[in-house]
Image 1: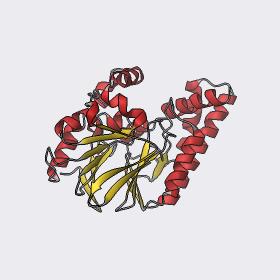
Image 2: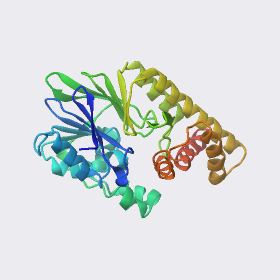
Image 3: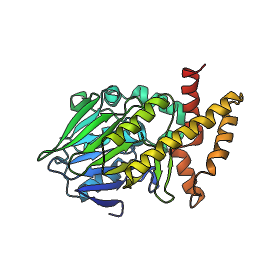
Length: 307
């Protein structure tokens, strides 16, 4: 299948084809003795992910674990569907997100407030997962991949209070979710992901520092793909966070409302990044790491922390 890329170490990147686009959200299948899917993508992507897993020889009862870095719908919206397709799999999530996978109505209601009618085409509906199939992680935890291999979780709540990073003991791969931002492979750009309501600068920087201290061999971004230059990329991630926060703080100090702050930040940051190849890709980037969403999240944090 053209949406599967072998990354070595029995790890396969699956392009979930979010909203029909390529290169937006990746899931990863670890084809170990106890096969594990990291990130499901959206509900509307679930059949694509199911077919990719099947094409790699994993049958309906063979998938042992589904784990998500956090419960935002581009990462975990397909959990209920994938759980139904693979009825023997346990579903692993941080304890702060577990209840939302079992009872997603509040999460879906808040998502609909943000996205409106676009919710259905972009994400679809997160369906409930039976509570007895959900394994809730604390600040650290280990997922059994079989034959002595583990996926070790580390709480990293700068992006969202239910976020974890995951390290594969066999490969040294670190699944960073959104805690290190959004990586754009075609330009090499790295943008922060600071949506409301959970963003906190110190916590975000602490999460990035933790990732560096774990000594990973490779970073696997949910958006999007593998990166070998680990320390350089994590340093860049922290730098981008500081730049965006400084710009947003400046706009706030000048009394700008959200729209004007967004316009100012957009103008300043555009020069930091390479031009995307086409308008459609630029629209996708805006969807994933939109200036409006990022600035809103930073303003929310500034309002809480420095009235």
